[in-house]
Image 1 (cartoon, rainbow, N blue to C red):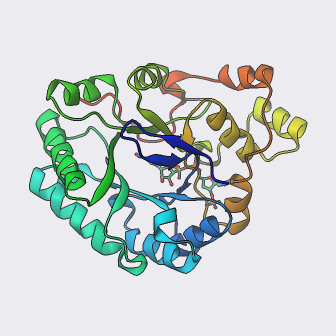
Image 2 (image 1 turned 135 degrees about the horizontal axis):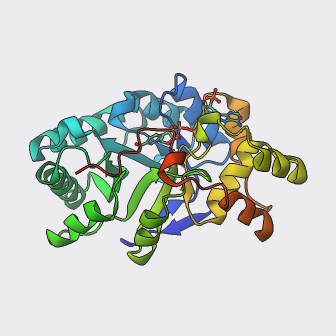
Length: 274
Ligand SMILES: NC(=O)c1ccc[n+]([C@@H]2O[C@H](COP(=O)([O-])OP(=O)(O)OC[C@H]3O[C@@H](n4cnc5c(N)ncnc54)[C@H](OP(=O)(O)O)[C@@H]3O)[C@@H](O)[C@H]2O)c1
């Protein structure tokens, strides 16, 4: 039974997804994930593997309607027409799994300036109105970028996807999203493999779980939607074995204490752009 969260637009989204950035074996990874309980795949135009993602969904044998597929428009396409063309191309890329829509489509970052990102966002809302997208969200947005959407009188995003793991907890953004009923997706939840840390190792031993499982479980228990990436079938499977057990509150507090704010970021994390 897949755990889901209800978005502010009424759609439901799985609480765990497979990330496919730099996923050399994207079709295989998506197939393995879907055959082992995952129901969400986090793609993006920038990853240049939407076609393979569609192939993986088709090969998995899981029905398209039971899979939640995300993509993101990159800032190079932030004009209204550029974003609309990108969206149409993304849908064509899902040909193998015969999909005429995305479950979620995000603006990939706030890079490009206010007018450009609002133009892209408007195109996504029109894509939603015409059935090409079910839910619209943003990625790497801080509070000020989301407030621009409200000030423009547009529908608010239902998701904000940001870098999020114990070392970089994005507290102001998370707090803002909570208040505004925006679900936070956690990217790079495994710190890109950088989990050689005494607390994580200690909890890994205590719970007899991989460090990666401890990180995914922390994210879930904090109410985030983690998107761990792996190209290796056995890791994809183990990273998804994060239900039916819990990290105790005192151990959650130890992980919480690892926060180093923006210093703890290990990716581009462009949440402060003008
Ligand atoms: N919106 C954005 O700007 C943005 C930015 C970055 C990422 N994302 C999304 O978030 C997803 C995840 O983030 P990410 O790819 O940056 O990093 P991540 O999921 O934190 O870490 C992936 C790295 O961890 C390794 N790994 C996976 N499982 C492991 C395990 N059980 N034990 C040891 N190592 C393991 C992977 O190697 P192997 O593949 O060899 O297993 C890979 O090198 C991306 O794929 C993408 O979908 C979004």
